[in-house]
Image (cartoon, rainbow, N blue to C red; front, side, top):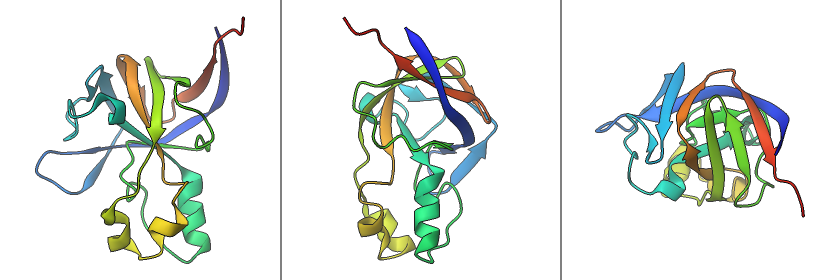
Length: 151
């Protein structure tokens, strides 16, 4: 297997149980059930981790929509646009390996920020990943795309 550096972690977020706000974290611990201490832990392993690119926020800003990082519900905010990566693609981040499972579906939450967001970010809100190797991810960790050898 070959690993190719593609970017870095810009920020990490979790949602505490009983709260609707996202909290910035310097590091997060992940296991096969998701992100420890996140309210979505052990809910749906294929949607355990939401990865969003800073480009999504830039796109919103170009349309005069201002919102702080974390507003899109992401757990990992990264400085690389991963939305073109297919399901099954693996990323090595910190001591974890994540596998992209599906594109993020839009939710009503985005309309509460701005009515234009669901249409604007239809294909640019984020991607879900599941944890295939548990470990820790820290802010500023490098992100590696794992290339599997072709036969």
